[in-house]
Image (cartoon, rainbow, N blue to C red; front, side, top):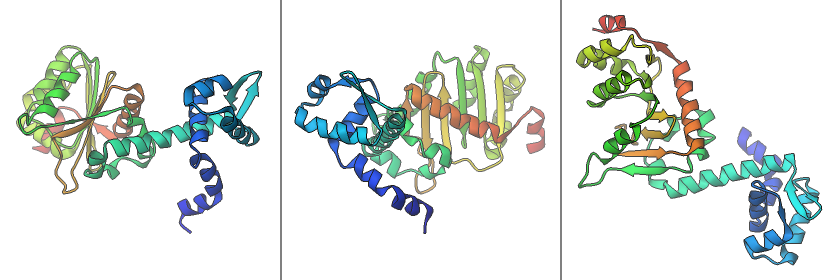
Amino acid sequence: MIPGIDLYEGVKEELKFLATSGVRIKLLISLNKENMTMDQFRDEFGYRTSTILPVLAELKSKDLIYKDDRQYGLTQYGELHSSKLIEFIEALHMLKKQKRFWKNHETHVIPDLFFRSIGSLNRSTIMEDMPADLFATHRHFTELLGGCEVVNGVSPFIHPDFPDLFKVFVESGVVVRLVVTYPVLKLMCDRHKDVLQHVVNMPNFSLRVADKDVKVAFTVTEKLLSLGFFRLDGTYDYGMDLVSEDATAILWGSALFEYYWNQSVDITEHDCTRLQ
């Protein structure tokens, strides 16, 4: 049997219990934030006491909640269930809200570990070019980078503005770390060798090259995450980015960057000579 299906067979009753009652779901989510009384449940959801009490009894029988005086709270076991339930709901909400973005791009290229926590990007927006403004996404991206102290990026392509843009960042003291592919490195050496030689030995600039083919482009700073993908036809979509200033999304993006960084190798100015 396929492993996932085998697991489902073992927990399908638990899934039904968690997902088939709106009252249970709302109580578990609410208690993840704070302990609550019966009066608070009634005021928050508009349910009658006769509706809420049986649900609380069910949750208590499964050791998911406890009652202390007049307040109800999650047990540690219940908090685990509640947190995973919230993660699942956030992921579904994001996929529904941003359906066109996730449906029309090669998102499967994200490593499994990070794909499983894709709900971390729930509090994000889609920046998109418009017919009258074909560079809206790129302009918005460069504007967002202003004032950042740390810029980490992974890119399988090179935009003509990038070399001079990052040169300015490095010269102004911004800590810049970049991961590129070998084709991109060769283009940097061929077309922007002067910029590369200028910044390559500066203490706040680091450049690495990925041994594997990279099919995702993103930049993460202490303030934001900007993420882009290739279209299903294999061309990169310059006109649509996912952008988030949410702390959870930034943490997700930072961990993804470290993943690529740790799988890449350092580049020095001598590498340009070797690639020519």
